[in-house]
Length: 79
Image (cartoon, rainbow, N blue to C red):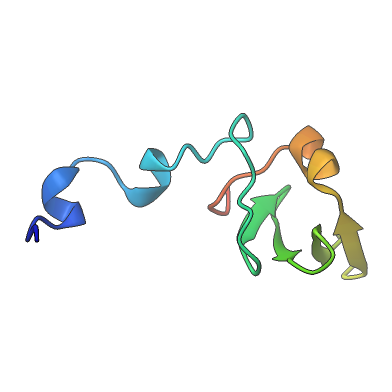
């Protein structure tokens, strides 16, 4: 059993940088995963395989994985 921690193995890189979080990577597949696109959070609904969030006016919005890839996304909120 190893006692090596995540911090010891890669101290200089934050978790987001190691995960490849740009829009060029693959979207997460775990239910309830959260990504950001155009300043809005989107949550993956596992049972429907769609990303749900709100638009600029606060109205519910559902996107497919392909639509989210085209819009661009990240794991962190871009300012």
